[in-house]
Length: 218
Image 1 (tube, rainbow, N blue to C red):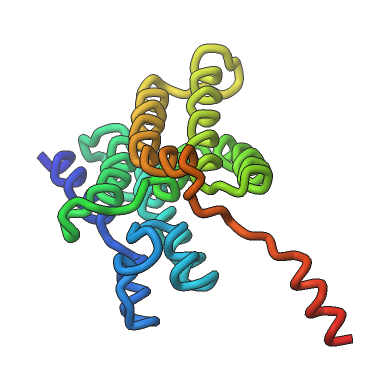
Image 2: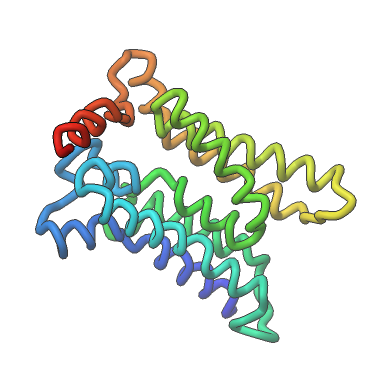
C-alpha cells in the first residue's frame, strides 16, 4: 500500500510550481501572465531573469531527481516493498506537467525529466548536456534543443540496454525514457507550430552589445 501512496507523494512534489512561488515571493508577479504563460524554466528565465530562472531550473531538476537518487541508493524507505525508483521519478514529471494546483496546466517536463535521468544515470545524463548546448547555440531554439536531447537520451539508453557490456540498464529505464520522449514531444507541439510560422522566440546572444559596453568603460 505504501508504494502507491509514495507515487502520489512524488506526483505532489512534482506539482510544486517553483516558478510561480518564486515569482510571487520575489517579484510579486504571476509568471502565468507573462511570456508564454508556461510554468517551466525557460519562461522563468525570460520573465524573471537569470537568478530566478536558475533557481527554478535547479528546483525543478531536484523534483525529478532527488527521490530517484534516494530510492536507488536505498537511503530512505529501506526494506519497503516499492516500485522501481524511476516510477516515482516519472510521477514527479507528470506532476510538473499536470500540476493539480493549476488545473493540470504546468511546465513541459524537460528539467524534471533531466533530473530523473540525473538521479538514476548521472554519467549518461551529463554526457548529453553538450548536445543540448550545441543544438541550442546553433538553432537558438530551446524547444528544439530540449526535444532532440531527449530523443538522444532515449537512443543512448536503448543502446546501453541492448548492447553495453559494462553499463547495464533495465527495461524500466528504457520504457520511462520513451514515455518522457513522448510527453516532451507532445508538450512542445505548439512550439513546433510556431517554428513553422516563424513566430517562436529565440534565445539571444547579444555579444556585440556587451563588447561595446566593455570598450566604452575603457
